[in-house]
Length: 409
Image 1 (cartoon, rainbow, N blue to C red):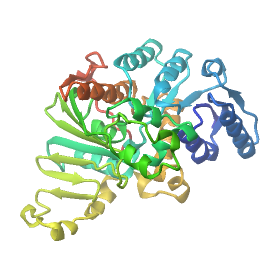
Image 2: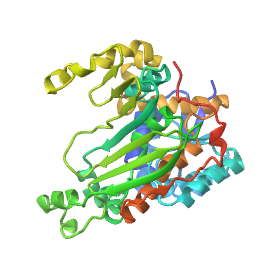
Image 3: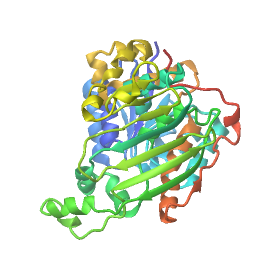
Image 4: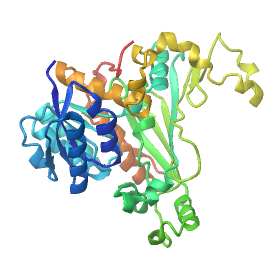
């Protein structure tokens, strides 16, 4: 098999994780070019590649110069939220297939530019939403496909992740979250929870999102955290943050479903995407990994904490039938390929689609729609929770586009 020659743009925390955890371990991938604004990151990545792969690597601080390299078969973009769409547009226009990391959009124009660049060039593009490939999200998806939940009317999800230290250390780590939390108030990272839900509900493929309503709590978490750690963050002790601690977003869909999202990143807590699916015949709860299905559980029995605890992790009984083979036969090496295995699984599918000329499982229309929730939520919050319309980035094609799951079983 011919090795794919890959370029990597963005060598910060996420880019470094992708390089170390996946790309350097794949025998059928050759990273031939790296790019970042910071020269020390470029030098460190190049040395890492040469130490592990014993071949030279081209280094860039200008991504447009990198995209003139005709040897590159595909590029992975893991830059800051503000820049990754613009970089992807440049790569698409250069004819280089793109795998773009996630984050919310700043403007609708940014989303439309991405869609237009793809439609003009037809260059392959995949949005790298890794949570669409995770174990429980995929199991729940195929349970839904088999009708276990009946007609789905509601889904919810969250990005609950205590990021206070990461946000506060943004200057030292040259990380983009700090400047965003200082200056924006929105659902800034919607796609981890929204992506799997959008696939379950066939968004952009027979269904679409119509409107967004968002409200935000006050911003107290970061300021309290910095006050208690003022010796560590002296430059931030008098700084006011704009980003609300909890952002609640409600999305309505043309199919009649509603989607609820929660952003929770500046208060104490545990990591949780909290996927919940509710249908006419049953429901699924990811956090406790249980399903309640008509005919299988006596619903009236499950009242009170003691009885509910009996349900925890009971959904394991569905794994044999509804999990893809990857998750049934996960190796230790795959498990260590990033986020428990889902990163490597996702990139394998991206690379295979490039080799085979297959349709990307998460395409440019998904990217635009999912990312748009950030700027739309920002508008809604600023308007006191008023509804804001979600554009149809497919230009009407959602009516006729067939379902596309990220994997099959």
